[in-house]
Image 1: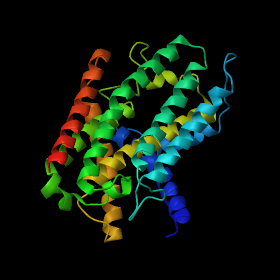
Image 2: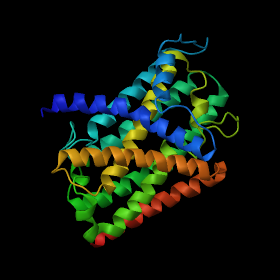
Image 3: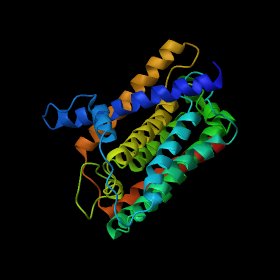
Image 4: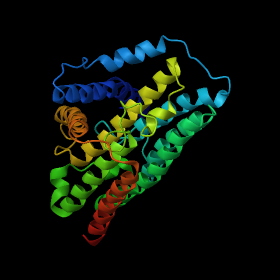
Length: 306
């Protein structure tokens, strides 16, 4: 498949599948709470409703405020182009694309923080400060994981790192892969503002991190932020699934089914975690993120010795 067509198909599938994962998380939490919960398709309805509403702007905001959600969505789409979701290499693949993948997501975080600061609210500035501070502790875990996979696979491209199924990779790198999976799951929770790092459903002033940065966003701007957040969650979930997927790409149908089921299982696991744990105190969050870094660092040491 030509790369342009592959990019279009992969982007379309990612855009359509990402809201379903949020629906699975909500239904899982509703199940544990003894409620029926909203339908799986509710995130689609929420996005359409926001796109049809009018945007309300603060008198102190500038063009930076509206540019933030657009740049955030563009960064998420760049991450989709770099992620090998289908059989074969990603639509955009080259040596070192893992670095671009990490910093594309970091760029989205940066522009969202700028958008929050542009409101002139010290409250949103507090949330932006927390967001970037915790992200600085989460990114090393990603890089240590990529270094370990680069050592095991001999490639520093995402497509090369993740092209071997777990059953083939396990005999020579099983412990390292297990440590990376544990560390990356913690990073997934932190980067996507999930419990125990953050609570996307809270509105307590002293505990919000991500939600406080988007309090002034409304209408299509808020819709773009939520849609980009869904894509970001899908990308981190895809990293875990590609790492742990037991089937290879020789059978495209089995591989596609395994990938979709794996993404749904990650969303289910996040829902279970959020239903079982309480949010950590802010002073405890860095400790858990450092633990994720250490897990991935130990994985790199094991891979380096293999």
